[in-house]
Length: 153
Image 1: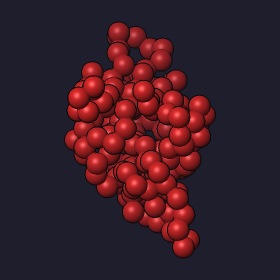
Image 2: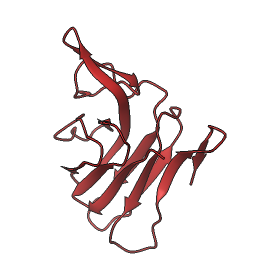
Image 3: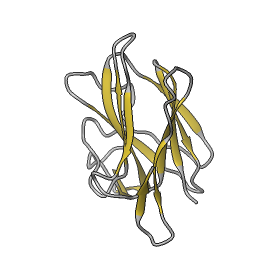
Image 4: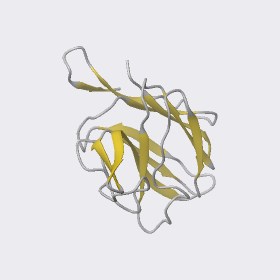
């Protein structure tokens, strides 16, 4: 089973882990009026982990692009491409179908919100798992079922 996960390690960092047997290229799109993250796209080899610092408050969506390559100096992906022509998405969102992780980090002491979503279609199994904190927060994920359909947990 292919699987990409994000873990909220703390209010200040998000850790991406690629559990797929192939490289994926996570993309990010920050919601206005927040500034973009230090990276808006990067490659993540199979089994690799990478963390990104996030400010508070802040809101964003993440997705994993697949089967990406550079052709004639232009970076393109077969699924969830952001259309920037570069590894960085530079303020561009995913072109559907793209399975999303949506995250809102509240100001200090506030409540954070997260979900895995098929609102822009399905291209890859993803999950988000909060670490630490209180309140009994659970993993949110979207997986392909044996019938080939997406399932949201």
